[in-house]
Image (tube, rainbow, N blue to C red; front, side):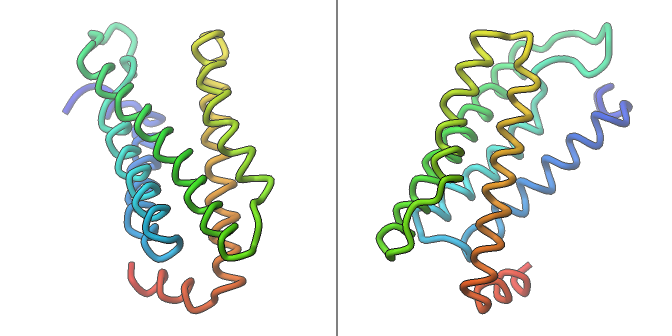
Length: 163
């Protein structure tokens, strides 16, 4: 076990990512069509990968691991791409069913493009931008869960029972 697991905040962050990623991977198949489900399940699995690898040491003075940093970057990039394409897939399905595209869909896809560019351009605010991306993603997932529960109560019950 490496030293980052001795830092309470690090343990909380890792636990949150593991729980969130696991739930998304398990529940996605009940909420969206095949493409949306696969892409959002990939988002959840990539979240697990990003949690497994640190971008920087959690403890001051701990050695930097370039391989772990690279693996985290790969998982994070795949996670962002899976989310953006998953939102597009779900929005397209909703559009085909006559429900239209939501403003939050456009915000989520736009944020998944613009915020990483901002992180690269202004590294000093990358932590804030990263948290904004997660906030937007969780708002999108929450909106979807509420919508599915309201418009398809049978799907919400099935999702709850399948866990």
